[in-house]
Image (cartoon, rainbow, N blue to C red):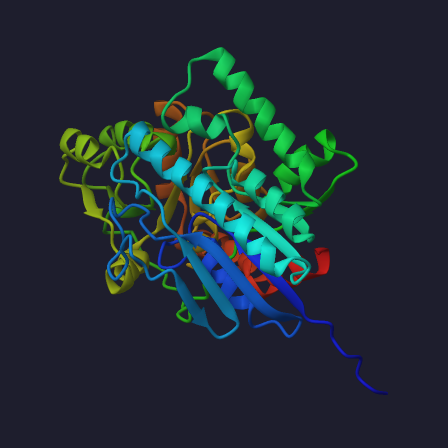
Length: 403
């Protein structure tokens, strides 16, 4: 029997953030371009500046604006880089990206109408890039989707606060309206899919987990803690949204000889927290990668997943849980919503009964009472879920089938 000819797709990925910035969209694009069903992947993004407070090395306001990597064609748009964590700086970056991407798509569509098959918008903050992606789909006459990574105004309330009730209502209105425009909504957790299906019963909604880059080192390293402190590690942003103050307060009430806490990351509250919680069993590593992070992972007994989620933001599954599951280490989940549901459902760690200092302390104490074999079992449960759901090639197949 002759093999059917595959009609290869031309796909546009519209995202404010892309490689070398550390986002799951990078892994998705890499494996998307490897698919036999894809002819070309057009990435439209900004000049990289995330968490650098300037443009990345080898990038500047004069470019480079265009790159080609195998089947990936990258266009980077000029923006005002995020120079600090101030609201003004973040807003200037958002507005500049909205403006340049809108202008770009107007001219791009003049020469590329009907030449592509689909445009997917990576809707992390600023979430309203979904509107630009929708407008671009109409200009280009292609189907469109939004991959929901954050929900406003809850994400704003969690990070910087938002007290103005009128502004909150306006943001909620435009967020909900935006979801109605595209052809497909991709939700990065099962809980978010269920919510969206209830709110938009006639919309095509598909669960599309965030992928994680494969780690070739998947050895199980079981640490015996009979005669040594139990090691907890947190990786990621040191900010208001992560409930780190609650964790640090709880950890400060534990015996310093029995517990160690590693904090790997940077953010707006790094200096304040590291000065306030300057204890001999709390180690502030800053932002680390490569072998330094591998060494932390090897010596970790539990990874900490913490979020101070408000309202619908609790439906978002943070990407770090994929990395934690990949490491084959159990998770301490100090959060509500999708993260807690996943850890409980997979039996991949411990969860906190409620977000109080005493409950967090109790969770740490419980973690120490669990023997190594049980910790190994929980870590392997998480790894199994990772293999069945978080591998990038599986996620790409789900995406291509959906569009």
